[in-house]
Length: 302
Image (cartoon, one colour):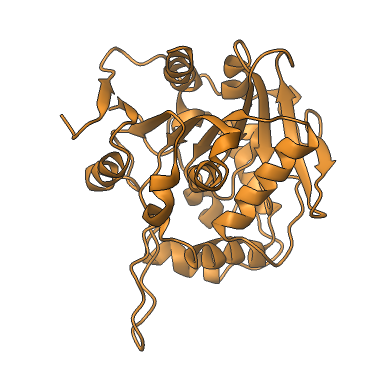
């Protein structure tokens, strides 16, 4: 048992993945946009009853709100759900700057301000988890509950020493090199993109949709999100500011967040509850929305 954590080890037979191709999820068919007070236009999908508690969902790197639509529909049974396109992604603005985690998190604060929402449950996956716990750290009074999915304790880059080569990111040296060499227009069906979104448990229609969403991100923004985000990768330094009840959701087959990185985050958030799904990988919300939604529902109803 990892120190101080309530570990929910779910070993039951996993439900079949439920992210089938959805014609209604075509770009711009289900999304709206809002102009924030900082001038950023942000895309989002709104689901559920406005009388229910608000929940904001934040996606992973080069993904968008569309891939989380099946999960969002399940969460909307008990929450008023906002699936956001974070800056640089989906139909949101894609400026050359700024992509440090505080920039993303401030957008979330302004999004809540725009809709007059004092507090919200915040769910973040992968890159979105960095943004979610940054928001929870700097605006604890606005965070009702926090859910971090496939989240390490840091972005994966070591502290860079003078005259030392820049270390590889958590994605690996080969992926870093491929991203540095991306050129516009990005072909969603190129070998790189097919491998980038190679999640065997997802159906082909869903993988094609996600590749199209990634390909609409300019190559310089792919690089900016990765490089500018690395300037603020000491995430552990602010974790002690988090006051909201927290759920950590991990996949046992996650190649980016393995046992060591999971253990580090659990140790830094010893009061958090933990859900570990042994048969899922890094893309948990897309791989098995019902299972992830059930864990979030259980946590929010405690």
